[in-house]
Length: 314
Image (tube, rainbow, N blue to C red):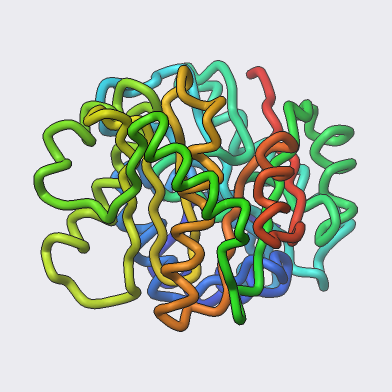
């Protein structure tokens, strides 16, 4: 068995391992090319592959910033692992341990101080390790490789067939508009001068980037999945937003000092209603915590997956 950097001819073999080992997170060749090979932070030395019997049998995809992410800069001490696997025919031979050792040694040699699995932006695939889909992976990462679990992320989904906004939510919407001057409307170009600084100030550059991607399509007239983007204002000031594209819901958020008015519930139900009216019959998202999960449950969301987010100090 040999471990070496990824080469151009490895694509088919690596994807074969990916699909066999990461059964719940398979990707197309197009996604591999656009979100891995064309990621500005990709380097073949950080994608070691294990080769045995003339074929790729395992890999670890690690990333570290080569270009800055907005004002977060290069984050020179940080690195991320977003995907890894060993083909089932070659598991339990020490290949996974050897691949991780190779990848982590390289990251440490670059001066990285910690590596996370796997909240990397802009191109993460899932928040972390699915604890139910891959039951043996968490013990391996903790025991054999030395990662520690930081927290859990919950993925949820909702069937929107026949979705209706409940009467109590409609009553809350009217009350907030009459008593507190809260309005929720689809975004217009007139919102952008207030909205974009609002996103940076209260939710950070990653949420700005994500919203910008949707808004570029929304205002640019590009094709693809339908987009809903709502803006909540209170007496003229932006206090919240909600976004959706295709079946992917969120993120959405409310200014911290306005979170006791139910604006988040109004944004959530109004967006789901628009999705249903457009014949989008399912909504899902990849990442939330326990507190927000209770809010989503009010709108019919159910748990889909649970992910462990991990970190190792190098």
